[in-house]
Length: 83
Length: 150
Image 1 (cartoon, chains in turn green, brown):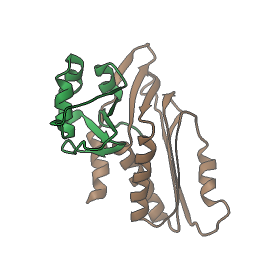
Image 2 (cartoon, rainbow over the protein chains, first blue to last red):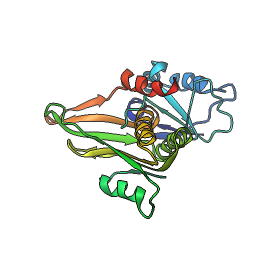
Image 3 (tube, each protein chain N blue to C red):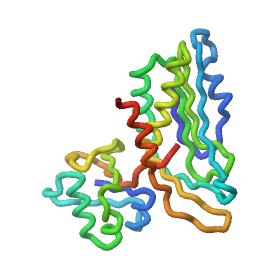
């Protein structure tokens, strides 16, 4: 699946998007955060405080317990500050 | 209903006029424009990042919720991204209805929900050349959005 990152999540990870291929046991958004955090310091820094991370699956907001199954795109970003 | 996410500025008066063009059943149009403040003369510009595709989709979902709650005859939402200087327009919400109550309430609801749900992020560039970290979400904005759930 494609992963996209915005604002300081993007800056800490050091890229705006990438293809990821998590193993089958990574079933939920929260699982994926844990799996990505184990990759390196940048990911760990981006995801160090789960309360400040928002996620979207196929461009719609989801909660951490949302299932990844079938989604083509996941996005991680901080709380929104538009308007 | 028209939703636009764009780098360019917009003409708020023209957007409001478009809501009533060719019809005589509209009794109230409310136009809200959000502007970039100079923050005590220290701000050079805001940089607004967005999630292309989702920004439009999420605003459309918020507009659908507004249309389900109030009898709206038209809605226009524009949100800009990129560099925005103090005094420039950032966001427009315009609502049309038969009566003012629905138009006022829907415009406020749309702004409150957009601020907490539409995927945009701001950061400040100062006149002294420094670039600050990303603006943090405010609890006050969450509280404003939560009012509508009571």
